[in-house]
Image (cartoon, helix red, strand yellow):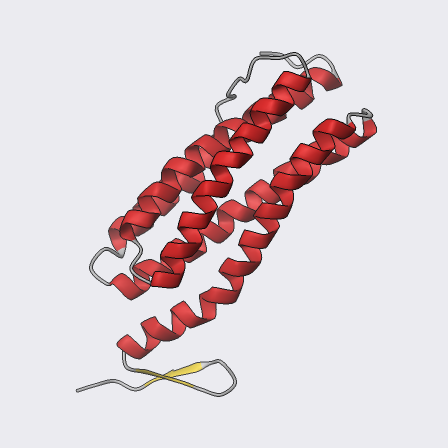
Length: 181
């Protein structure tokens, strides 16, 4: 479909993140089933609930615009989900590494969403749609908070995986491999 004006562009991008959130929700549910670290599981569980609310917020944005919610197929989200699923398969025999892979995939997703929401907020603000800005801002704040939590938990997940591999963790945060013979 050709996009002929800024309103159509906004609706397209709104449909894009609507589809992305739906794809990511399914991906989070799959990640939750594969995660072994209790903190990671809790983080995913919390974010599943947030994502469900974010989708409801997007429904409300469409309604405010007098539109029916419409998913625009999001190739970016599909690629991130496919990449994560592949990595889950490749790490299935080592749970600690799989947890690291899950955190890494989730971080990529959060930054995709953050970028999308920032662009939508800017456009809605310039169009004078403050009700929409507020809903999108709620979603953005949750995504940014989740990204910070993932980034804060990643070193611990890496340390667990490194310890299981018998790697020594230096005080500077770098590691030295000590082979076990």
